[in-house]
Image (cartoon, rainbow, N blue to C red):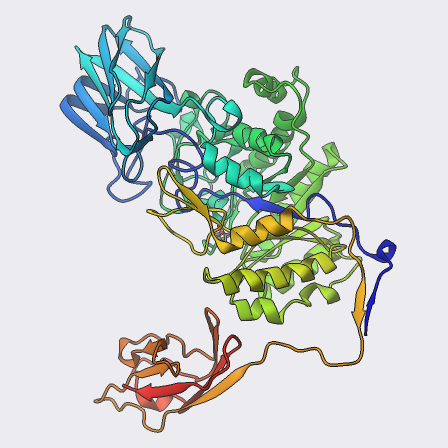
Length: 605
Ligand code: AHR
């Protein structure tokens, strides 16, 4: 018997129930959502960003082209510039610059000196710009594409010696026509989800490298924690930084653009601030109280930037950037996947106290640690509960089986404790079965909407030529984009959020759970020190589930419980020792497959 209703008794669902989490991972920003077509436009790439990066990465010079950093630089934050007599060609991102026949592209360049600049874009009529004077000045022009290509190039040639910087080519048509805007197809795909919030900018990204701050006097440290002040103001004054994921971030897509985009798609902005304890496994916490206080002040200044009057310091900058109206920020998160619970907590409460003292109504989101289990998770949850934190950010990436088996996860959460923000989750792999497992799980999130206030699948975007994390929701190359089945599933849920949960209960009968199919691997003979008997587990049709080379010294698949996509290996107990002999291996393993109904075969190879 299924009893349904009354609806009035169910939890309310809010517009924020589902949202998106944008992080510049998988080259999601530069060369992705951010529509700039020129790579390394300000010659700031550096070996700290990634091995082999230089000021001329993505540029091919001809003639005399030198990247210099001296006191004639464009400004303190944009330190490198190019001294050119000849030409430089930019290769764009991946295969090149994507151009569509007949469409307009906005070119701009900062230049100093006196000479003519010629601008050639593949297939387009060249434009020429006369540069004169010994001070930096911005020059602009419009290029009309003569052909459609995803392999275009931009060449800038000088008839004489010039200093050049911030060379930019933007599609004239960006999402909603915003200046310094977003690539239309990608922004439209995100908008089509109808997300209730946008979490940004990370993720591990906010924990990049050391915790030093940008400071001209401190010799422009590379690889510093993400700081929103680096990312606002005119683009040519924004410092670039190493990205946690191993490349350079131009910060062309910065806090103003995130706020603007959130507003454009009717979503609540939800910034994540670094807690100055580097989560994501970096195990470092600042001991510099002055630096911590500076970041706390940055958090307050961010709220002023988003909401303050145009007469305030930061509200004025927002207005100068084109948005005098406040953005209506209500919520900020502090930290991401923090694995030093004591140090994180000490910092979190300081951020929270400062924010609440000035903005009592603000929601300050805390953290549950690196994943959904383990000591850090329990420890931080206990602290959050005792403290009465508004909301706690949980993350997990797991097998589809896990999602099916854990539908009831939040049924037992304390109704009076902190609310949950499920800031990152995905079932591992990218098959239709994964999306179904996620959908099933989301019914559990909705059923518990009184506790789980927000949820976002992650990561959102992946450049198919630069993948650091899988699965992802939206994939793209230079000129195309497509959603995964999880994208379609998220879209279905996000576009159909109800008002209330209709309570339901089942009695009698039998609740059918996914049936685990179990097969024991009968490994009667293990390898000896001399013979390498590797194991292979196959389906009846002969396809391999996994094979393990015991000789390679890795315990792949043989740790007591290890998720392998839809597979869970239970038992096995291959323990690694320094001598790596067979004695340490248990002689049987159990394989559980919740997806298929057949018997397993295991063979020695
Ligand atoms: O979503 C990808 C990464 O997964 C995020 O940066 C991090 O928070 C998590 O570990």
